[in-house]
Image (tube, rainbow, N blue to C red; front, side):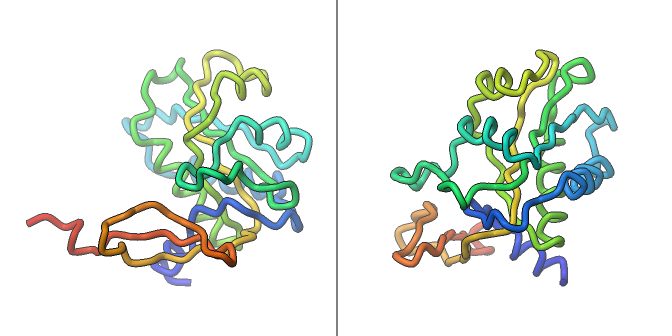
Length: 190
């Protein structure tokens, strides 16, 4: 698969097939890719909590918001939920600011997942205090992102931005997830 194809296939999936499950070994391999990625000033302040365990996944799930533009959708139903999570943390004893490290790490993880036939979603809308309590995360670690992972259980299509400029993603009557994208020429200035 070309790099462009990999990027095009790497979408924000919010519904998954629960069989086959993601393995802990796969999660470790994905974090290893993130570990090898660039880090500002080479501080390497990120830490990770991995979950491929259904009971632990069930403790993570209720603390996540899934799709801001799909107001009436509470998130994936039982049977469509991720089978793995990677929680990206900042070790505040190493650095007080993650800079862009967590974005680099998360995108690397998702590209690695896509290469393995998996899909995922970066979730920034997290009930951080509640999730930290549910998992007994020590105070020195700040939750930055949660990455939900699994075998994609939905189709995601990129669409040209409509004439009214509405960037909100939406689902059609068959459940296909549509994501409007701005044209390249609108993004390049000068």
